[in-house]
Amino acid sequence: MGATAMPDLDNLTWLHQTYYTETLKVFAMVWTIYIGFYTAFLSANVLGLGLTVQYIHLGNRFWVVVAFTIQNLLTAATSIGVARYGTEADKKLKQVAHLLTDRTDNSVARTSSPIPIQLSRFAGYANCIGCITLIVCWIAVNSIPDPPAK
Image (tube, rainbow, N blue to C red):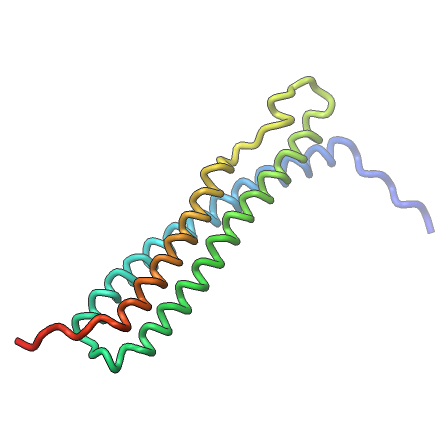
């Protein structure tokens, strides 16, 4: 069997450039999907809180509270996952940028990434805190008395 040929340097550059571009696209798509989901999630929670207190009797709220609490736990975990994904994508892009600029003296491109990593981390962890706050609200809903009868 013959030895495996080394990839052409131009093919390697193309591969790195493609990986860089695709990572940016995936990062943008992850956040686009997550923002859409989180917007609907917040709307459902706020609406659910109000409707539960107003229309579901105190003794019947337990399973509604459990369902929304589980949903909030899953969303909190997703928020952390999205924040961590941003951190990993940023690291990978910096590594690829370093490989792409290895033959040049472009130190800015070597050490930077187009991902707004601080914003990405903040948004993910802030959303997680928001989910935990909603869990507290849902637990409180289970003890709010029924509105007075009209």
